[in-house]
Image (tube, rainbow, N blue to C red; front, side, top):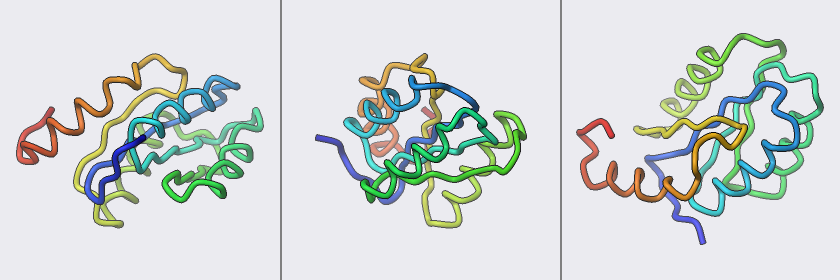
Length: 119
């Protein structure tokens, strides 16, 4: 079961990741809520499929760039929206499964215990 936070979220920038993104998002959601994905102009169909997943999961948010703007821009879009929605902390992870999702809770709980520190 995933933990839920009103201050901390997982942010996943994504550009043409293929099917691996679905495994990554599901694994992240199993560890934490909310999870936000920024689809950065993907043309591989993953954006629409992620939107469909988000329609079934109130703790999954998908933001979309109409064209590829780069990973930095995708992260900035996610952080800007997160701040606008009252979030204070974000853990970024790649959409291709490079970062182990089983570490999410440890990072987040450490951050929640010391919100003034960078983890």
